[in-house]
Image (cartoon, rainbow, N blue to C red; front, side, top):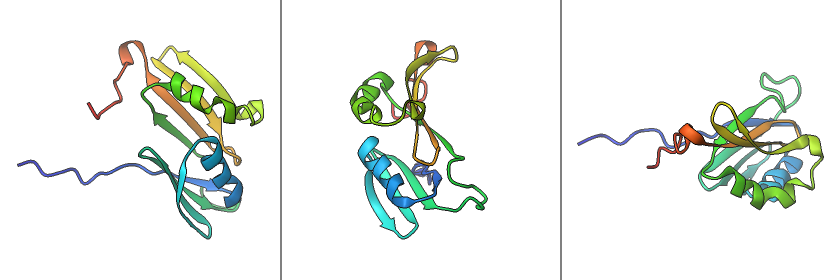
Length: 135
């Protein structure tokens, strides 16, 4: 009998300068639920996608705003449609609409209040469904 994998999920740490604006962004703009918020640490999750927010100063090894996370999704256009009204409340240089790329991905992106980049993407064309390991 095969042993179950010890791996569960990846939850990247994102450095933030101030926790409250970061929590408001992930909760109110991207629709994440805040499961833990204790001092300078928070855990936010939406449908098995999670981030660990860590309040850091500019002198930290991984200072606020220097992270990039890629979130594979089943339908980038539909997700963007659900988030668009909230995204439109942000400055135009903080997000971009879905675009198809020559490397076979449809992606849109958003920057949190500190500048951390979150890209949401799906495989298209020959890449369609390629990253969905749940199948």
